[in-house]
Image (cartoon, rainbow, N blue to C red):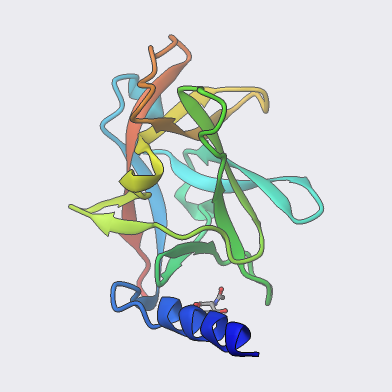
Length: 169
Ligand SMILES: *[C@@H]1O[C@H](CO)[C@@H](O)[C@H](O)[C@H]1NC(C)=O
């Protein structure tokens, strides 16, 4: 019993983390800074890949851009229903230089913030930045690259920054 209450206390402490700020201000995510000009001014959208799962693709029409918001340090998509859809980042456990980005049913992973005007993930988790590649959905797709295994960028890819474009409500 004592053991359980310690766990509960730890959980409560984690939730009360003062770094976590909740803001429901919604934004689109727009690419900038790509060496490959075609990959600038694109918006992140969700691409259905199965029950409750989406890949993150990029699209040039702002009118269909997915609205996102931060809840503390999780990043969630508003897909127009009651479920949260959270950013999930492929783990850097396979010595690869870049990893998947998915937006799946559920709260997603922690570690997101807006830093110097850019939407970023946790450097402690190995986040070096975002990568866009023409990939297997026959469209530009979002990945994250690992700062410990920096990628040699293939000609189908480019590093990008993601800027939050806040929606007027
Ligand atoms: C937002 O974060 C709070 C605190 O961690 C959590 O209880 C709540 O379920 C989250 N909301 C969504 C939509 O994920």
